[in-house]
Image 1 (tube, rainbow, N blue to C red):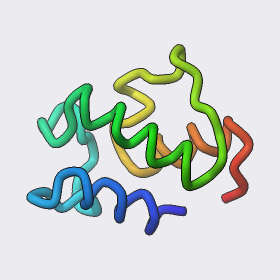
Image 2: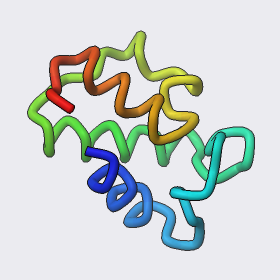
Image 3: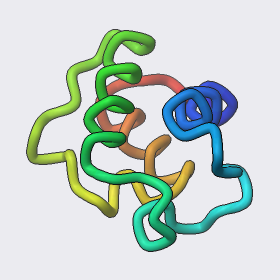
Image 4: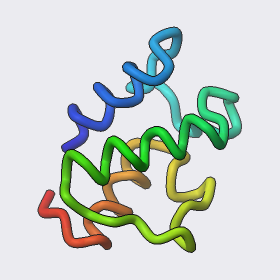
Length: 77
């Protein structure tokens, strides 16, 4: 799952090394449009629907946070 998330993030913002970051939001690697794009990719890949209430910066701050969000939405790790 982590590899796929890194692949999506790199597709969205190829200029950053997401594997080396601890907080994508604070480091300016992702903005709100990037998060919406990522949510769409995750929804399509994992056949889930991430609720609007879950689209918060803390849920997209790093790879582990994104994985936890997917697990919360029923994706098997």
